[in-house]
Amino acid sequence: MGNVWKGAAVLTVAALLTKLLSALYRIPYQNMVGDVGFYIYQQVYPIYGIVVAMSLAGYPVAISKLIAERFVEGDVAGAAAVRRIALLLLSALGVMLFAGLYAGAETVASWMGDGRLEPLLRLLSFSFLFFPLIAVLRGYFQGQHDMMPTAVSQVGEQFVRVTAILGLSYWAIRRGADVYSCGMAAIAGTLGGMAAALLILLFYSAKRRRKKTAGRTPTASFLHVGRHLLTVGTIVCLTNMALTLIPLVDSFLFVPLLHETGASLDEVKWLKGVYDRGQPLIQLGTVVGTSLSLALVPFISSAQRSQGTIFTQGLLPFRFAAVIGVGASLGLICLIRPINTMLFENDRGSLVLAVLSASVFFTTMALTSSAMLQGMGKEWAAAAGVAVAVAGKMALMHWLVPPFGVLGAALATTGAYTLMACFLYVCLRRECQLTNIQKYAYPIVKAGVAMVVVLQLYMWLMDAAAGGRLWATAEALGGVAVGAIVYIVCIVKGNVFSEEELSALPLANKFRLLSGSR
Image 1: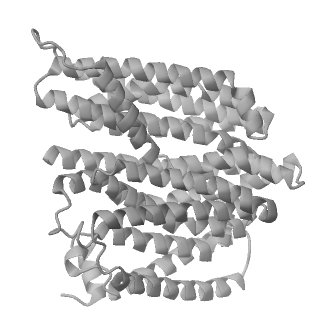
Image 2: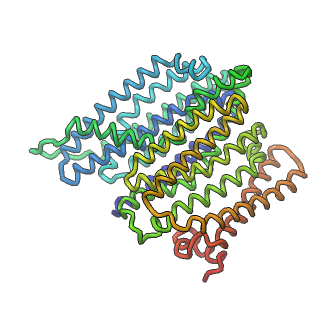
């Protein structure tokens, strides 16, 4: 259990770092290439997100379970056989996906409404050739409760990818390249990151190579491994694609639907680029609230839903996610204009981004509920939640975009995450008792209202002064500080968390002081 906790902590820190990097690099990238250049990158990025889910969260988890079973029995040869079979099966899948996207790049680009995306899609198809070996190596290490190679390769991949994307894009701009060439440079940087991850894993593999045990017949079955990858691996992949598949729906529906309303293709590209500013905001808003849930999966699973713990009976992670989600959503909505100017140079599309900011609460609740359901062994429910969100997004896009345009797309995104959060909440209620929901909801809402009132007064005072990006930066950062202080004080005073629960949080003594406890 000590190894499990240590491994969970390592993966949680790695996930937090990579999520922050993944959200933050988009801001300087958008500043370099503009809204149209940002649109180009965001159109194809969800495909890379699918590759990440397959190589990091989905198939490695399934493989690690099979590997762990062999090592518990002392069957090192059987574990090696599982690794070989998994590599063969995933390699076949990777080659098929590569060939399909490479050959069908022109068709996919036409479905996205922009034929000039074809070279980017063709280049991105090579990412499917990297994922099999990356997934198998990560799963093999994790099956031995060795999480360090996965964590280091994850952070290393993201660091190299972000550095390469920004560096190559800047180089392309300096050479006078157009925005589509900058997009190609960004995709090349993405492949460079995957190559770095593979090299790191191969280094660990060579360093920690085990000696084969003689005289033992491998017990791995080709059919058993294949069935396990197809079911468990695919389900876990799907549960980790919530923030990827919704933007993928936008990639295929946004441009065609908006173009049908009479807007020119150039105008639609610009509008999509402005709309895509909301993606890093959603990621940044959910990263804190969901990072805790990643560490809870092994604990909930090992605790077998013990009703004597504050994690299941009091549902501490659920309340924590609600507090973070409400605060982040309302704070972003109130400060969206200066935040938009601070990050993206101007305040275009602030209303659209405000609507997208509302989805931060629902994504935080949905992803936390999903992690808890996975910890209880209900992976099917978590995967079904993602399917509900995607189906809802597609339906809402066709319903809302024609009359409301880009605002309709934002409403569709928020609506899709709302459907997912509600569905998973119902599933969670069937598995454990969500006690005293109303008791905790009232002080959270009260704290949110207090923060909104203070921030509205703050914005009124600040807007009366100077303008410009520098002033917007000061206005945004000051607003974040003011809103956070008011919100945290109200949450602690409202006794949303007990003294026992507060003692488990960082700066526990400060929280006790705010709540008036000794």
